[in-house]
Amino acid sequence: MHISVEPGDQYTILHLRGEFDTYYCPLLEKEVQAALDTGSPNLILNLRLVKYINSTALGSILKAGKVVSKSGGKLGISRPSPFCREILSKVGLDRVLSVYDTDQTAIHGVLGTEEAMNSETSDGELKLDPSALIFKPNDVSRVDHFLERAKSDNPVHGHAFGKSWAGVGRMASLTPESLCFTWQGGSTGLSAFEMGQLLAVGTDWSVKFRLPLLQRGYCEAKVEITEMEERSDGIKAQCNFKEIDDTTSEAIAQYATDLSFLRDELKKAMDA
Image 1: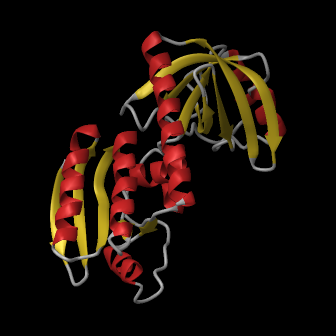
Image 2: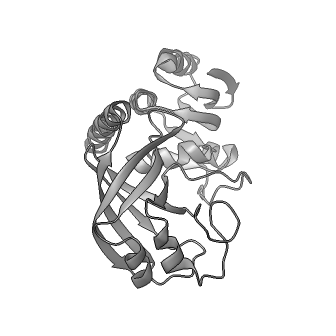
C-alpha cells in the first residue's frame, strides 16, 4: 500500500492506494502521527483506491480515530471504494466514523464549516457486492421444473435458463457450521412462495461466497437448506454445511473471530 499526503488548512488528507493489510498498519500510524505533529488536528482518509482491507487494518483505522480525537480533532473517511464501503457498513464502523462521498464534503465535515451530505457512490464502477453469494442446485432438474416457463435471462450468465443456471443472493450471516442468505429472485420473475419451493428445506445446493476480510477469491461448499422464510421482497434461507474443505472451514472460523474482535472494538469506541 502507498500513502500520499495532501496538507490543508487545519486538516490533512491521506490518500491510500493498494491493499491495506496488517503489514501496513505501522505505516498508517506513522503518517497519522506525522500529520498531527504538524499541528493539523483533523484527518481524512481517502480510501477510493483501496481494493482490499482486512480486520487488523480496520482496527488500525479505529485506533487512528481515537488518537485524532484525543488530539482535539476529527477523523473522516472519504470516497471509500465499493469494497471498503461494504466492509465499513458490515462491521459498523460507519456508525462511529463519518464517511463522506467526496473530499470536499469530508473537509467541511471534519471542520464543521457546513453540513456534509452523504449520497450513494457515483464512481460508476460496476462490481459484485462483497456480500454476494452464488448458489446452484445439485439436482439440475429443479431448474427445469421451477424455471422452465420463466421468460427472463439467467442473472449470472446472461442467457436463457438451463442446466448452468445460478442465482445470486446476499449473505446475511456466517458461522463455521452454517450460513444464511437472502434472495430477491433476480430476473426469474418468481414470487416469494415460488422461490421457497425452489429452495426447499432438505434440498442440496452448491454455493460460492467471499470472506472479504481474509481472502480475495471465492470459497466453495455444499450445503443443505434447513430453514426457509418468505418475505415481502423475497426469501431468507438458512443452510448447514455438508461438504467443505478444511482450509475454507478454518478461514470461516477466523472470519467469525475477526468480526467479533471488530465489534468489540466498535462497542468500546461507542461507549468511550
